Length: 322
Image 1 (cartoon, rainbow, N blue to C red):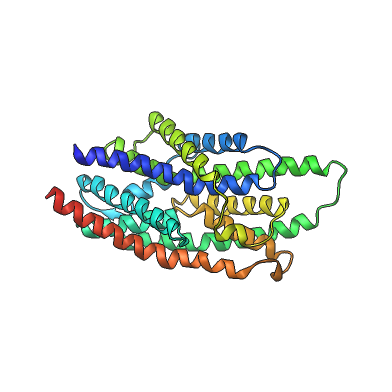
Image 2 (image 1 turned 90 degrees about the horizontal axis):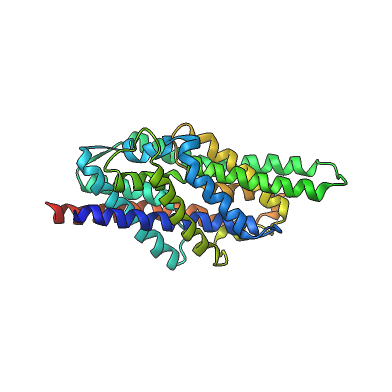
């Protein structure tokens, strides 16, 4: 009973942190050069997250719940309690210390560390493939951003261009919301399913879980969007409206292309890749390359730190429950 309560509390906290970290970052970038208020954009993002399982299924979520470790079903709850709890604590700590981090990397590392500590055999091969695809996604974002940036420069100047640009901006953010719901956002459903549904994900989307995830995510996104972004992404280049629009389309392409394969990738890092590619389409000097270093730091720090934190949390749980 104690484990169930702790896991449910951890799941709610995890969804809130996803909203503050992922949702806040996406909203901040979206409203920076748009005339629209944050309210409608937040509603669009939350709607996409809530409808994600119905629209795209739960392929990526099942990667978290069933493809990263091989052990008895009863161990899954302890693994997720240790792994998700460790990732929440680590992301909060690193953010407070000003160290770049990635929530998706933190979850992957935390679950792997918890697997080892609790005697569950990690699927190292599959985890390696997931991490390789995750590392490639920002690079795909760079390439897509460069291509889109070059294409935008070739667009003819039309009489109704402001209206066309406004429509494209909304379409770009909408595609980004759908991509997040199809891939990166499904880590929330994995944790919630294990906490509230008992074990693996149900064949059909759990409607009550959809509503709960969307509501808590919305609260977290509102809290995260209130702060001024201080991360590397906001400093990569002096952005203009078309930069943001191009980066959103580019990151959507990178993230959606891996969703069907069940490979979780980071939307925020893919956005950063899209911004780099878009800026580079105007020339290499447009990008402030020194601010790409923290994106690499996120990998070098978050992954080993989350693995160690998840392992420690797993050992503590093992001692308490044995």
